[in-house]
Image 1 (tube, rainbow, N blue to C red):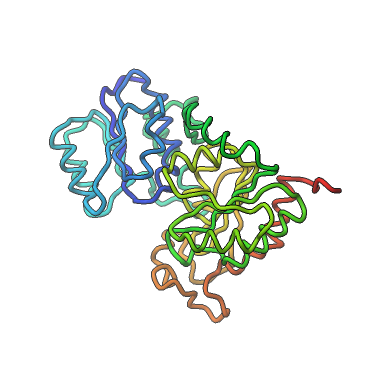
Image 2 (cartoon, one colour):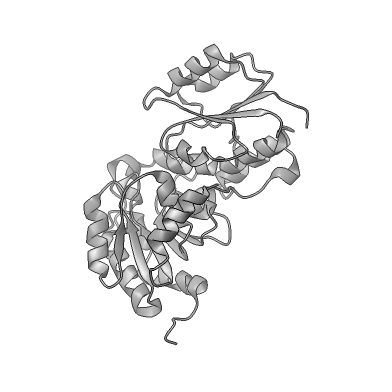
Length: 336
């Protein structure tokens, strides 16, 4: 590849999961231009996950609520030879177009088929633009430090295996599987496989505490802290079951088998690649907008508009369905 000098990747969609969706494309750029300078502009705390990646020179943080201004401020004091962005809202793409960069890609989506994963689409477009080499395309991978891994090992190595993390939190209520389902799942996991169930504390301490107490036995909570601490802990898991949210993607990026539960968001676009498994609640929903699930009536209301008696289509995923997938990952119980 020809040298680009200074490269900027703008990822300002806002979620922890979004930076991980873009990570395969970011890392492909880094491998294609090893001698060049790759900068990432993104939001905290997701950007923390990239800070020790040897392919990335800098992570710059945008101020929450000031995405466009953060782009303007950066481009007013620095010039980049290549700018790639997955962010077009608030005319951010126009700001980038006027930056004077030699090469610009501000649309990493471009009318994809409904069953093409977003991250794959990003990589495919960069390849079509001649900006990455085919041999640089690999699954997204988080890089954790030896000290971080050692800390997690000290916390978790004494716990009975299998070690299963249940991650119930999600940014929107409509994406959350019910507490009672997680309790029944965790109880069944312990009855069948023994081991330890861990529930990380997300936005609600009560949610995690209620689930862990409801499961009983060896179930415990994982305290809220730095995102990298969670990533290090997840890297020691045997399995992660999570709503469609950041922790599910973190687990996949540290090579842990993952079962991700999808409701309003469409697994064909936002799901994880094999061997990870994606379970979709009510896949035949007539109101689902696969191109942009945030446009659905249910997204901001938090209520399913269909006459199903459901709060959310997440209720279409049964505990037995999840346990059937767990069987494929963990195999027969230790007592059988």
